Length: 166
Image (cartoon, rainbow, N blue to C red; front, side, top):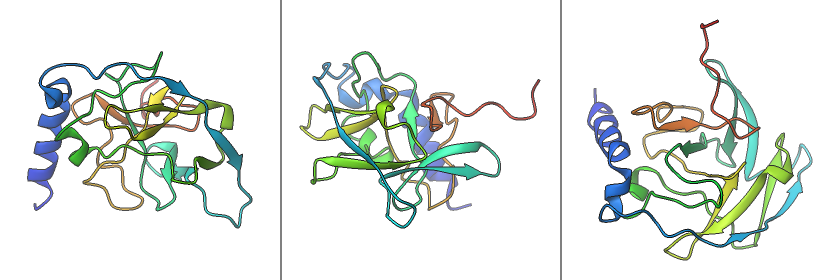
């Protein structure tokens, strides 16, 4: 199983997210509004609502990669605790150089940004900083529910409901 070492490393990184930055939380950043345009079906979207057969409605990026949030990141105001080596496993989703992001199937009022300590402008959904998982390929959700800390994000900015439970 060639993915097992990567998943174990990801779980360890998630368990020590605060430790990625010498055990300290990232400083709270200034929240900035983002220009968001709803795209037509023919256009590519930076964030798109998709349906996963196991998890239901999720958000994917323009390359079909599942979008995640880390439940230990603060949302009011948004900030990222994933710094240093953590970003190798959980690359942040940054605002494109155009200064605007497009969405499809997502309320544009839920999308925002904040400035990371490394000066990158990270996208948020319902206040949650957004990430990709380095162990995913387009259409997969390998990062979902790792260590009970990282979850795929729904178009409304929540984690997917647990299926099969009443």
